[in-house]
Length: 477
Ligand code: FRU
Image (cartoon, rainbow, N blue to C red; front, side, top):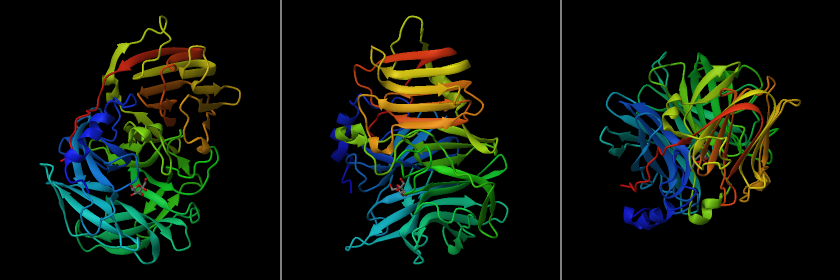
């Protein structure tokens, strides 16, 4: 446990000097960040928490760290919110979600308990966060379910307005070692919770051995089951065994059945680093939701580990359903971060914090970000108009990492390539293809001799420097 903020002040001072600190992506205040948690809009502000291990780039004891925004663009550090300081969460306040009410926000999370023999038990715990930011732990809601293995976590709270009931869905593992979702329900936020059963997902009874971070969203009248199946490989995903994806379909809360529209599990992100996506409903528009994910992967390591920090979140993305899949677009308000326009006629230097927009006039396209002066290396983005595929390859960068998971990702674009928006921050690149039809997110760690931009192809290109949008202040208490 953190005895006081002072314990990590010098770690923070050292962390913020890193050349890889992001300028407009939420990142760990110190130590390690993984999943986004409890993403919610409440009384004029967006609240977003992240899994946080304060002491270093390790998946050690987890806290919920709190960040706040009024516009989803600029974010302020608000300090540690849930601390692993009870019997129920003695080995971590694990992931979960939020429910806004008139007078406060409720946070549901997994208390990761281990006994002296290191046997794990998951408790579903509740915190009441008042409007002054005070977090009060309430009585835990229920303990582990003996019909499943020890892997039960990541409660998503859902208020079903049709029958008035509250549901908590939890990622779990059956005793046969298959991934699944289990469901609890209640007529009340903080008591009377009872086990309802296992979610039936026809066609997906044997799909990975554990499902982490499940969620059911309704977007444009479509139900979407989002989850992270573990320990399976998928075509086009290299050696990666952890995926963040979704099924479109229909949720029937009476029979606890999610019937997928087809047999297709879509990955949310075609890039290398994306996991544990979390959605917040849009308060003004029921057809939209905003998604944010961890720009990282479990069981992976990153070059800043040696600087004792790791992890950032993706940009928030607006979700819609189009052509039977989720479309992810960068929020419109992100345009407000645009600063100086870059004159590409006069420079081939790529700013470390910028946005590029490319409108293709057809044909092949090749873009190299952070290449060397002789044109070699860099993050290579290429579109092959004959094969109708777009490929992102990070093998040419000096700092290579997680090589065994594959350094190339390919996505078919049957209708061709017409539009790209690329967001570059100090240590990440997010590529939005064809108006949100596909997204590639990747961490990158360019070195001094990697600074050039090369574009080949017939396209009009615009580029802007982007202003800082997150704060680096040391707020812990
Ligand atoms: C996903 C995850 C969750 C868990 C959390 C712990 O990355 O493993 O299942 O709650 O991270 O930090």
